Structures are given as C-alpha cells and as structure tokens.
Amino acid sequence: MRTISAVLFIFSSLMFNLKATPPDPHSCSLPQQVVVQKVHLDLKVDFNQNILKGSAILDLQRADTMAPLWLDTRNLKILKIIDPQSGEICKYTLHPENQWLGSPLEIELKAGLTQVRIEYEASPEAAALQWLSPEQTLGKQHPFLFSQSQAILARSWMPIQDSPGVRFRFDATVQVPPGMMALMSAENPQKKSPDGKYSFKMNQPIPAYLMSLAVGDFEYKKIGRNTGVYAEPRALEAAAWEFSEMQDMLDAAENLYGAYQWEQYDVLLLPPSFPFGGMENPRITYATPTILAGDRSLVSLIAHELAHSWSGNLVTNATWNDFWLNEGFTVYFERRIMEALKGKPYADMLELLGWQDVHHTIEDFGKDSPSTCLKLKLDGKDPDDGMNDIAYEKGYFFLRTIENLVGREAFDAFLKRHFTANAFQSLNTETFLQQLYQYLLISEEDRNAIQVEKWVYQPGMPDNAPQPKAELFDKVSEQLTQDLPDAGIAKAWSTHEWLHYLRHLPEDISLARMEKMDNQFGFTQSGNSEILAEWFMLAFKRNYQPAYEAAERFIIQTGRRKFIVPLYKELAKTPKGKMLARSIYAKARPNYHFVARATLDDLLGA
Ligand code: BES
Ligand code: ZN
Image (cartoon, rainbow, N blue to C red; front, side, top):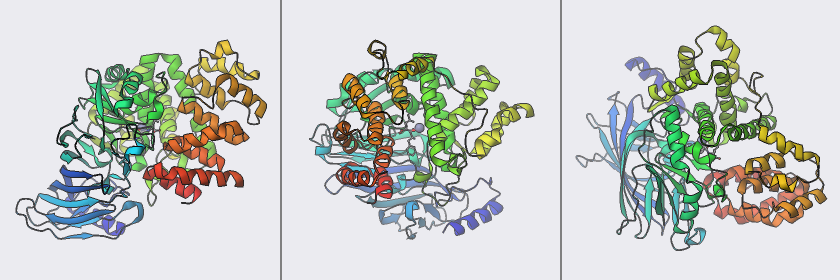
C-alpha cells in the first residue's frame, strides 16, 4: 500500500507540480490529490453497547479530479457511503488492516463530486476511546466516555485524513443519554441539555489528532473572562480551586507571544485512568486528576497544555517525526508562563528537574541512540512507541541555547513571528530551520555557535547546552548530608524541592533511614502524586515493604503512563518483583485506557 501511495505521490507531484513535501508515514491519505476541508459529524453515543454510531459528511477539495479519496480508519464498521446530494451510492474499498495504521479506506469519486457521507460505527474496542462504567466514576451514577486521539487514534472513531499535516473545520451533533453532557474540541455547552442532544462548531481548522469527545456527568465553573473548568460535580470545587490561576496564565501567554486564537479556554478534569497528564484538545484541555495536589503545586501542566494553543495547535508538527516542534516549543513556552506568574527561582526549579529528566532518558537509551535525536525516524514504527521525553526537554534546551546566544528580546520577537507567520499551518523541522536561519541565526558564526545540525540530527546532548542552576535546590542539597532534613527548613519546601530531595538520596539508602523519613514526613501517605511516584520508585528499588500496599493501590487507581510504566519496570527487574508486577497489572488492566494497556502488554505480557 505505502509503495503504491509513494509512487502515486511522486507521479502526481510531477503532474500537478505540487510542493514536494514528503508524505506522512503514518497516514494513507494523499491530501495533495484530494483533501478533506470540513467534517460534519452526526453521532449517537450508545453506553449500552459502548459504540459510537452515526455519519460523517466530508467536504472535499480535489486537486486531482481523477484520484480517489483516501481516508484512515481503524476498526471502524463502514455501513454505507453515499453522495449526500443525490443519495447515490459511492464505491469503496476497505483495505486490509496494517497494524497501528489501520485499514485504508479508498473511495471512488465521480466527476464533480465534492462531498461524501459515510455511515459508520466505531468498535467498543476503538483504540482512542475509554468507556467507563458508573462504578469507575466519582459520582457512581452515570457512565463516562473520553477520547484520546493523539497520535494516530482519531481514525478509530471517525474516518478521516489522520495526519497532522491536514487541517479541517468541523461541526457536529451528538446525542447522549439525558442527564449527561457532551464536550468536543469546539464551542461547548455550559449546561446540560434536557434531551441529551448537543451541537458543536469549530471554526478554526485543526488536524485530526486534536479531535476530542467526552461524555459524562459534567458541571461547569467559570474561572476568568474566557476560562473555566468542567468536572464531575464532586470534583468541581477542588478543580476550580486548583486551577484558579488559569486566566492569569492565559493573559501571561498572550502577553508573551500574541493573541489567543481559540476564543475560550477550558479544562476538563478526567478520571485517573486518563493515560496522560494533559492533552491540548483545542478549547478544552484534558487533565489528569493526579495534578489536584491541594496546593496548586502541579499546575505548570495547565500552563503546558495552554501553551500548545500556540505551539502545536496553531503551528503544528507536519509529521510525528517533527514532534519536537510541538513539545520542545511548548515546554519552553510553559516555563516562560510559569516564570511570569511565579518568578525566576520557581521556573529555575522546573528547568533543573527537566535537565535531570533528560539526562536520565539519554542514559536509559544510551547517548548514541537514534531515539535521542530531535528529528525522529518513526517510519515503519508505531509513533506511540517512538515518541519520548527527548522532544520535550532536549527540544527545550535547544531553544534555551538559542535564547542565550541571541538574547531574550530577539528570541521573543522571533517566536512571535513564528506563531503569527505560520498560524494554522503545519511545519516540518527543515522548514523551521530555514526560517530560523532566515530570521534569527542569520550569520554563519551564529549557526556554528549553536551547532544546529548537531542538536537536531545527532543523538545525545550537545556540550553547548546551558547547565541550569536553581538556587532553591542548592539549599535542598545541603540537607542531603544528614539523615533527615531539618524539619524547620523542610516545612517550607514545595513539591519541586521534595522531588529534588528524593531524587538525590543515595541509591543504597538504608531501610532504617527510609522508615525514619517516612514516619516524619509521611511520604507513603502523601496526597501528591509526583511525590508518591518518586517515593514508590525508591521503595521498589530498596524493597521498602511498608510502602508496597499504598504503591499497589496507586498503580491500580492511576492510569497515567508517566507514573505507572517506570514503576512496573522497576518492579519487574527481579523475578519475584515481576510476579508481583504481573499480579498488580491483572487487577489494574481493566481500569486502563488502550494506550496504557498497549505499553504494559508489551512490557509484562498481556
Ligand atoms: N500532547 C501531549 C500528550 C501526548 C503526547 C499524547 C504524545 C499522545 C502522544 C501533552 O501536551 C503532554 O505533553 N502531556 C504531558 C504533560 C506535560 C506537562 C509534559 C503528560 O501527559 O505527561
Ligand atoms: Zn505537550
């Protein structure tokens, strides 16, 4: 299939003299020939069978009037495809499934046809969707459904050109059971509709990976002028309190890099099985409840997802090989927002924790591993397996290196231009570098000073990376020389300082010391997920039994991959631990979303 597409692509590029952007290795669609411009969804959410059922009308632009329409699908049941004007049937072929890429859907297009209507059903096993029973929710009364489309899972709940290089507008009507609310990456309701029918409109063009749908017993609370939060009623107040700085974040972001292009910015609080920390669905960021620490200490995650409204949602990576353009820029922007809100010493802590993370990752992969390059080569791979922290933190330090050389003022002007000039477009690494050379690193001398090629195409961390420093952490490090930190000093520590402390305890720490610390500071019982995850790591390394029961509960409760995967991995290092890991996983698996299951099935065996 791919070979045929590639040949067709080259052929059509020659015939139509199209810009020779390389095709996306993770989509069968050939947008240079026929591209979807607008989607009209009409869906019914069936919680009895856990299926979405309905239709998608696609508005098409046809550069090649002979070519068929190619769509990505995965596990979809295609019922019928028609011309919505005449009602005439369209011929189609659903090609055999190709692992994570799914089944290409090829639709013949008669002369002049610019719309098709596809009637379809998503499977109860749709990879993007998690269907939760009422018992798995806070309220216990209603079920819950949420989607996670990034990276290439949108195709499991709609037939679509599932490439970050293709953007479309959409509208939708969604029927849900009465008493429940539906939310999408679009203009959203703030109240439940009595008949369970909702209409949505997204006027800005977005790529498929940003399509989202959530259905549950939601209530809304406004936070600021154009910000607010959705959650199950029981968590609404806590979420609104924790995220009370959202409006300040949005104002700070606009101040830095220009107007917010999506009108409204809301957060939806998801159940703990959400496999990520956050997901930047346009207008409606999804967030894990594991950031409800009760002290607002983990809200840089909201700043991160908000920053994606510029880096990612406005200027989008063209393929998943360019993922660092989404995440590296977003981490940089996130830290600038946090600096604006909380000051430099705070942002310095985030940066230094990031530095520790990236070095850990490079050590894990090996400093010569191609997985540590910014530009990835994910062709022939499931992008979900190939995308890692490197995009985030190596990407961040690359941008910091440039900032250090040219100065903040020039760098900010460049970034502002970057978001304005490339708005609502996709960019690959090479086009970005061209612009970097054209507008910022104009002299050969500057380019050599940065070593751009090394940063982007070589593995490991270049030696001109700025070594970050955080004064607040120096004070923490001083406390590491004694058995326990001074209680008077530690009383004032934030989550980040504790993380720094825990990460720097000696690898062979004695069980007696762990117990003393645990008794004094209550790590095993902590309500802070980041501290718990760090502490349980140490507990597994040292076989500190008093934490095992709480650790097991945490792992079963939480589906956030960043926490559970390293914990399972650590546990599975010994034969006895592996047995325990497997038995915990057997209990936990029914609570996890598909993407967490996929990772852990590989790790532990299904
Ligand atoms: N867009 C990502 C989540 C993602 C990445 C989903 C790749 C699927 C594939 C999101 O913006 C993100 O980066 N989330 C982080 C939190 C952030 C603070 C680093 C996460 O989920 O941990
Ligand atoms: Zn992100």
